[in-house]
Length: 156
Image 1 (cartoon, rainbow, N blue to C red):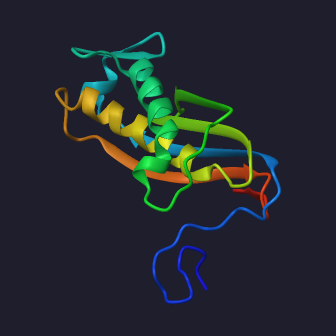
Image 2 (image 1 turned 180 degrees about the horizontal axis):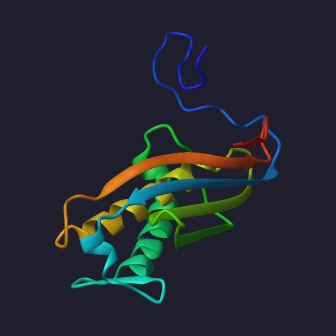
């Protein structure tokens, strides 16, 4: 049975009342491909647009979104994160790599917060750069690792 369905197959929040409180972490990654007309605005590790500093704004937006995950994803528990950190770097293939790591001491995991943080940071980069080009691709968003729940996960 799927964990978000009750015995009548109706949507249900997972009951975590019997779970143990543990320290939990999750890291998610979004990868973007930016065209040359956007990358030409890169200087000292930051993209500048008419809207301002792209990566700095995306980091703030991603953190804000991660904090609101319980409001955005219908069956997610509202969580008070212990920490949320977002990094944005350019890879050797000129792809923008956004990583969001969220931590909490709680009865339920925090991977959705990490995934939302990385996703919204990527969407913010898109929004701030679309005036330069619409040929921007958010290539993938994926969970990289999680710890502290029933099973740990690390992408190989």
